Image (tube, rainbow, N blue to C red):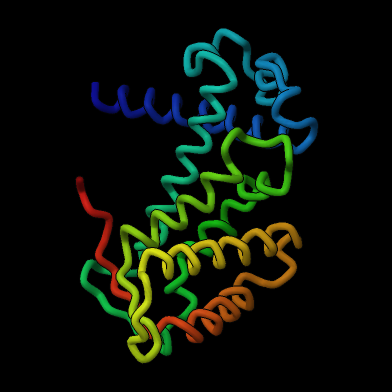
Amino acid sequence: MENNQMDTSKRKNRTKEHFKLALIELIKKKGYHAITVKDIVDQASYNRSTFYVHYQDKIQLAEDLLETMLAGLEASAGKPYTPGQKIYTTKLSAPSFNIISYIYDNRNFFELIKYDDTLAGFHIRFPQTILKIYGEQFIFQTINNIPVNMDYFKRYTAYGFYGLIQNWINSNFKESKEDFIEEVIALSQTHIYSLEFVGKQNK
């Protein structure tokens, strides 16, 4: 019985994944607003009745796609760390920036930031998620303990990081992932002395 439930759940998730991939491809081809449910089911090679088992409309599909990917982005940031771990920026390495690896591994999705007619709210919620990660999961220490407004510091750092990410995506990932991470580490070392991972706090 449990195996049947697991198989059903896997099949359901696989079907939803196909619809999400279809939506991504269609946004790149024709823009979000021009897409119909018929376009989505044709692209994914399903029928409309299967679509409506999982989603009410394309808006719900789009929201599920965006929520899932941004939740993955949040989770990816802390994967290299354990709560309470303090890292000095001089000791940062490629694994420290798992968040960049996540974006690169899911570049098919994150490329949607290049399009004007894309998922509703993506241009706002992507940088907001990075700010949320910085605000909730990390404690920063400035170089020489220079006293600053830490809310401003995190906003400055998060949106600066987002700008670099956006430029990297817009350049079609011209720099290798490894080279890009090296550049981000070098920039981090100019204003951050250390960071402490506090983990995602349950509210």
